[in-house]
Length: 79
Image (cartoon, rainbow, N blue to C red):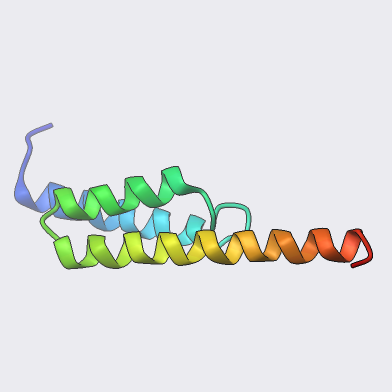
C-alpha cells in the first residue's frame, strides 16, 4: 500500500477508537501498556497535548485501580 497522509490519519483515528473502547472496559482500564501505546500513537501523530492528557489519565487510572484494590482487600479481610 502507498503511504499517504490520508491513510495515516485514518489509521490514527481507527487506533484511537480501539484504544478508547478498550480503556473504557474495567479489565483494560489500568493496563499501562495500552495507555502508553495510545499516548505514544498520539504523540507520533503530532498530537502532543492529547498525548499529555492520555498520560495524565493513565496516572489517574492507576491511582483509581490501586485504591479500588485496597478497598476490595479491606472488605475481604473484614477491616
